View 1 (cartoon, rainbow, N blue to C red):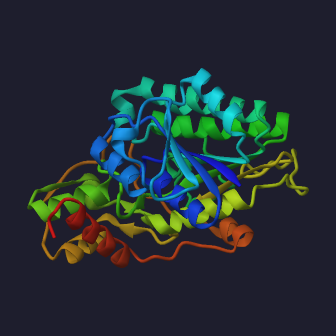
View 2: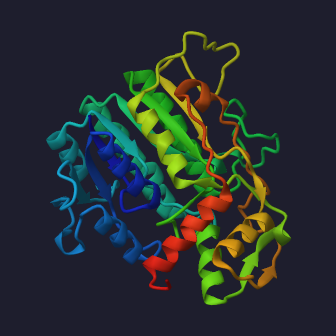
View 3: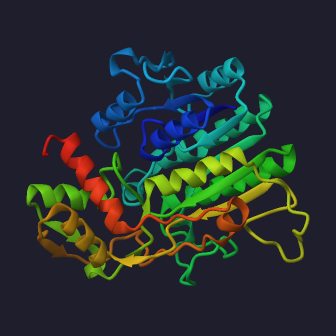
Length: 351
């Protein structure tokens, strides 16, 4: 297939593009390369994909020097005319939308950025798919949508009507928007709720990266909610395996779905929601120990109260991913953090 992957200078998008290429697909990558975090890391990922920073110019397609079937374009999803032109020119078979303004805490300070990228941008993707005959759409949602829900493990059959951050609200909105397009236009729309993704090339605003950096530099880390948090930390390779299986196996309408007892995760339209998580939540202090063991040092800790927008625990029920795709994540945190720390040392010249 020819697949558009948005967010390919980002963490999950970078890996997804490479995995699709290895599977024999043609990939067009797209990213705005915004400065939400260090752009050098974004350009580093692109360089790893054969896309040279010096060749990147807004709106122009750049051919990878490493992968003949990979090209990249810097574009904002909010730029509707340019996005429409790209769709018309390329005629994609499938679209995987992983571009978004990420981060829970940042959404408290910069709410408009989330509406522009996650709502307006996603709307433009839906419309471009609709007008160019793209039926196969997968997109990133988030475990954040579970919000105030305390029923564990989090199941896609649970209600997600009580988000605690605008970021989560935009992801819930994406799911609703996708269902509308699945119902009205027969687009096969699959949403993927990711659970605390970590690994080499990870995001520097997330705990695994922050803890690794602190361990290797001797800095103190802030431990929120006094360490009494649980997270379903999921290794990047496990996430991407799930994403690619979904792209290659677009969802179908459910013949068993009933409007009298509506299941939120499926529909009479070709619409589906999956959790992708390790399904083994661990306490924050246990995770910090895994970082310390991988780095060979103890990290000084500053215990803090819980932050606005944070949830106390996440825990993915991945039974539907397993039954439909024959797959469940399995990488243990000890192994995943060892690889992450090794990458960090190498990338930042601390080997």
